[in-house]
Image (cartoon, rainbow, N blue to C red; front, top):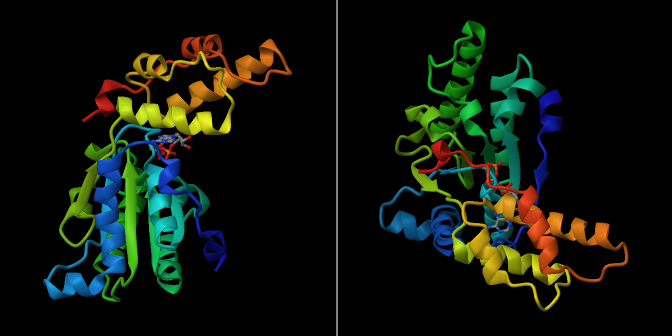
Length: 271
Ligand code: ATP
């Protein structure tokens, strides 16, 4: 019961139009998550077991969380979100119970999406952790998660969406058919995606006519989505520092922001 109170069910409000670019990615995820929930008869008719879950992997700050929320918003699904490391810190000694609680709640409020962010913390490869007791808790949590996914109690209308920066640390058992059987790479934003992120920002913040989005796009190769957003945010702060009565952002504000915000994604996290 104590754990129950901490599992928040939300109805998120992230729309696809809030997420710049990534058209192909959005489609793949809709197919994997929304279609089985919207057209279950079609899957049954063709003898296909709808996917139980998907794993999104890729560098940090590239919209995995936004996408998971948009999937829920799009189909009016309830959304339960758990960060891997949190499961151990918030529910000390009761981490497996927390997993059961999350799924019980998800079934109660179905159709729903359970989002496991930083899922590698939950289910690192078995026997990977140096810490003896730590690893056995992790093993029990993973075992519980697999049990829920395989569910004797059928997981109807509950889709699991998981995200990680470190797919190499995920226990393969989690990726077997009938579990998180779709693996989808969420890359750094390409030029078109960065252009859209700048444009989304421009809709909310007045820009001087001389602001050249093409130039900003070409200067942000290698930036994550979060870093592109940070550039916009820093540019606005620079404008305010220049003049607290500023009414628009100019190119030099962006130039300043590009000096302080630099791309940080280590090559090891790219596919
Ligand atoms: P992490 O792996 O760190 O959890 P993530 O991949 O889940 O990151 P999000 O939390 O979804 O990334 O994105 C971080 C922030 O970056 C968002 O809140 C948003 O401001 C911005 N962002 C990233 N990608 C996009 C995008 N394609 N369109 C608009 N904003 C974006």
